[in-house]
Image (cartoon, rainbow, N blue to C red; front, side, top):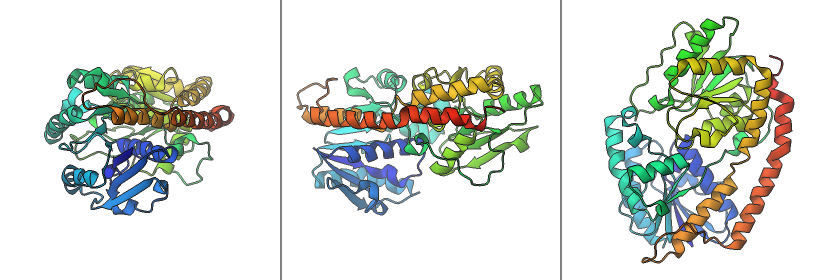
Length: 420
C-alpha cells in the first residue's frame, strides 16, 4: 500500500488532537516496513529524524504555522492534487478534518462530536462550519476512526453512519509522560508537593469555573490546607469567552498558559493530585497522562472518561461542586488513598500503548485497501499475520519495560507525598 498522511496537523500548535495524530503517525512509520508512507506537510518537517525511514517520503509543501485560512485552503485544494500526483492508495487524515472533494479511498480520525452534542460551548462561526463540514467528511470517508465507545456512539447517532463504517481505536500516552525519569530541578513558584493541577485548554466544556469554586470552598472549609491550584493551558479564540472568577484565594490560583510537554510532565509529577472535571471528552488524554506520570486523579464520570480511567480515578459529577470539593479534600488528606491511586493509575496506563493503536489503524488500512468498490465494509481484520505478530511483540516488550519497574518506582517515591 501507498498511504498518504494529511500532515497539516504537524504545523499546528500541539495540543491534544495534534499530539495524538503525531504519535499515531510516528508509531506507524516506526513499526511498518511493508507499506510506503507519503507525509504531506510543511517544509520544516523535511529531514526530521522521526520520519527518517526508507519507506517514508516527506513532501514539504506550502503549509505555514499559524496561518489557519491558508492551511485550510491547502488541505481542501492542494492536498487532493498531491495525493493523485503521488498515486496514493489511501489518504489518512488523523486530526478531524480532511479534503471534502477527495475521491479516492480515505480514512479520517474524528476524535469527538462535542460541537454537535453541546453546541452552546462554541462560537457561532465554529459550530456552523463544523456542523457543515464534519458530517460531509464522515459520510464521504471510506472509514472513520474514533477514540472511544462514547464518540463512536455519537457518530452513529448524530450522523446516522452504518456501524461498520466506524472503527474504535483507543489512544495512548506520549512517552514523555509514561517513561520514569527524575523530576526536573527547574525552579518553581510553588512547593514541590503543594498544588492541585489542571492541564488542558480553557474552554467552557472543561468546566474550570466549577473547579475554581470547589477549590475556594475547599480552602474555606479547611483553613489548614494551603495547597495552591495551578492551571496549565490556554483559551482558544474559536470558543466563547471563559470567565474564570478566582476571588478570595486568587493569589493561590496560578495560570501558567501553554508549556512544553517536558514541563507539563514535571508539573504532573510534582502535583499532589490532578483535577479534570471536564463535561465532555472524546477520549480525555490529560487524566491518563497524569496517571502515567504518577499523579492521583479526580475526574468526571461523564462521556468517555470512565472508559479511559477505569477504577483508577475518583469519579465525580462535574456539575456538583460539593462532590468535587469532597473528592479534592479526600485525596489531599489521605496519603494511603493517594498511594493506592498512584499504583492503580500506573496499572491502568498499561492498557494503552501506541503499538496497540498502530495495530488498530493498520487493520483499518488493510480493510479499506482490500475492499472492492461493490463490497461492503466489514469488521474483519485483513492485516497480515507477520505484521500483526511483529506489533504484538513490540507491544509486549513495551509493556514489560513499563510494568513492574514503573509501578515499583512510583510506589517507592509516592510522589514525595506519602508523609504529607
